[in-house]
Image (tube, rainbow, N blue to C red; front, side, top):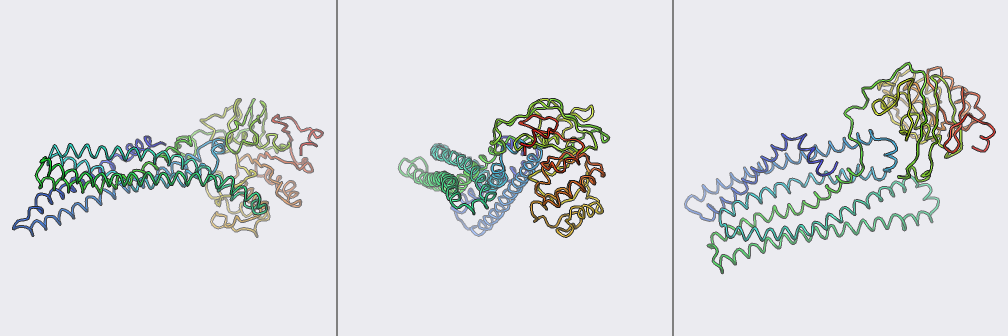
Length: 551
């Protein structure tokens, strides 16, 4: 969502609030000019009713304070509501995006948007009241100047035009440097991620740590520093230019009044006071403008993520048969396009057209060497990757965009990079059956490792093997028909690996799960109903002879 789309979104969704806010801002600006006019017409011409004039002046100030505060509060509330909507919309867009698109973007770029961009947009709306109210006050004060002296107003208008032109030229440089700074922040977040994910490796190899710090991180941070400094320099120049020019306008007005006799001294004084009143909101507006520009850069960065429009629902209305008998991949192909971190190592890899059927209730083992396409096939089967060509069908129903979300509800999984959520849910989204949870805690030998309270896992700070067991518990209690396990047993000790193949797989099958497991444990292959093999992107029946060199 870019700047224009955000404004359009705000106008459509908050039309009533925007109208009220604009009316309050306009009234506060008019009231500010009314205070100025009262000073010029009453306080500068004191008479016997001076005490009465002071009372009126205090009353006008109080009314101006109330209107200005109400206008600013209305705009601030609207701005933060819009930021909230953008934040929640962004997370929903991420959850609705295809996995490959998220992998191609990379966690660093997405985290930069979730933190830095949203923060910049929030700051933009915090400063927006100054920009809006300053602009409206300047417009109202300019109308008052025109009323006082058309000729001096024309001169003041030209002077302000020159002031704004100079400010615009400097602010263009601010915008350019802010855009470059934002690009560096993408790289910085990726490097933060690398430092955290690779902390163990950097601790063991300090030469690597030194090179990473000096040759990767520091140059990026230095570039960001350069652009931040120059953005702030041009911002300071814009503010000082505006300040000096507005003070110069006061002197020029008195020069025209005194020496060129364009107006009386009283009118010149009134106009000078008006210009001085304009100076403060103009400086505030100039000060707020770079923040608005930074918010605009952040909105453009969000737009560059190219995330899909968020769905109004989490589940599609489309339904698929619950009594399905087979899932078929028909001439399915897939190729990595080489973008993003996830595909750098396999930029030239592609799956050959493959046909594969998964029968309900069977246990299928997939074997193959590293990089042969096993995980890619599991992601295609579960609907997380979209085929480049060919299609997937459930019985006679072809899976497409209209029912893909419903298709994914067939699957539970434990991938190699499993992430553990605390909720234990059944397939329909309700809390999982407590008896089933307790039974799986016993099956997985986790009853002494973690507690379950009100359907929530209390402790996930476990070893990698125990995390995989916990992931299997979460998947099993969902009671979905298909369970995808990506080298689940690889992180288990030999004893529990035997427990998995000889005890847990039969329990899962008895509970109605169809199992698709990636495995290298040829010692336990006899527990599978069928074994298939992936070699260089091609799917074949298992051949023990050729598989000897695959593991």
